[in-house]
Amino acid sequence: MTYALVDVVFLSLACVALACLGLPASWRPLFAAGTALMALTAVFDSVMIGLGLFGYRASTLSGIFVGLAPVEDFAYPLAAAVVLPALWRRLRPAPSTRRPAPSTRRPAPSTRKPAPSSRKGDA
Image (cartoon, rainbow, N blue to C red; front, side, top):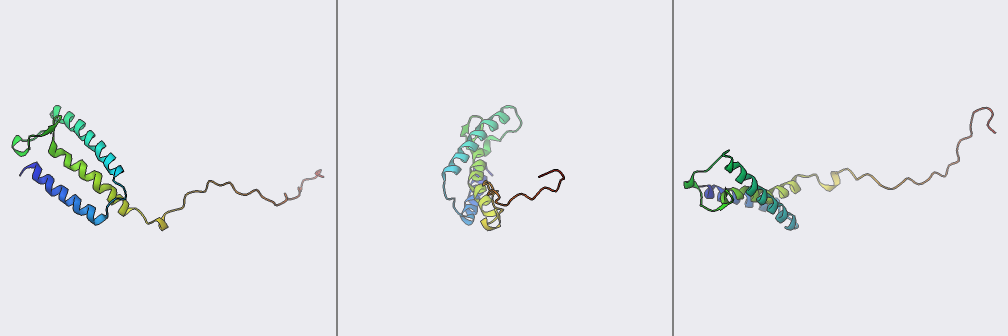
């Protein structure tokens, strides 16, 4: 089995999950997060492969690389950038069950008169 086939199955499941969880209101944050994750994947996978921490059999790869990282490594951060925000949105509490934010307003000044002093010698 090739990594590309595993990626197709994984990304298909991610698309099904996204369809079930609901599409995002805006794609901009997902694009920004996806871009950052892809860049981090390229850098850190290249470093780890360069240090010999892990490797791939050439027969399971497409032969396309970004740095030392095979292109097949980029399916997982792509799926995470799309599915995790939708999952987060779905699992967070409904707005009515959240605690209200603390008020930043100052309390109104009191209009009550101060109580008379009970100490001797006060007039």
